[in-house]
Image (cartoon, rainbow, N blue to C red; front, side, top):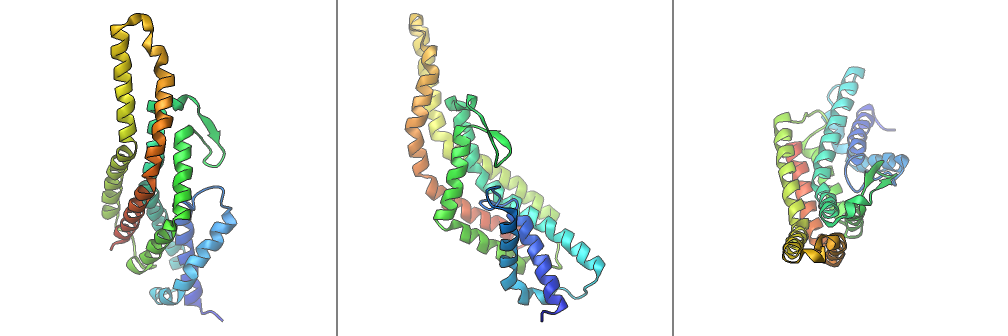
Length: 251
């Protein structure tokens, strides 16, 4: 028979985990049923319940309601920090779509409920696949479980620290995006420059009519090189995501 503090700790810990799973990749995909996410949240919180039971000195309806709201805020904040890191991969694919001419071929994605282009969606799916296949998701889960010891159930997030981390995370997002897509974008810019010079030197050739086919060919030819470095990028992003969660929790 479980005691009241144990059940209360399990409930609050599961609420934080559920809020985190709804936002954090790779678990935020709509391909994962909500029932599975709920069970996974309980599975994350259950082993931690004995050590969390002593963090709730007073159990009343008011404290449980306030505690549930605080855990939702904590889970959403930690999930947003995690998703902010891995969003760099999809952002790099979106940049390739813009500079490579694939942004014209957008399609509605029923999983994200938004329109996405070719490389943006492909890079997102590849990131999710690499997280699952390489086992990097286990380190992300481990980092999240460590937040329970850094930020107890009766603790609160520091809004000042959280705002600094979000600001720094956005800067890291742009830097990582340029690091992933920058080399290919530089080649595409050189191709545009070469076509412009060719059009000036020989206007009769109508070089700009070759712009889209040439840029699409270069993007497809160089995409393999960009994809080959993604496993190393995912390793670095995983480490960054774990450190952001720990710092956001107050470590």
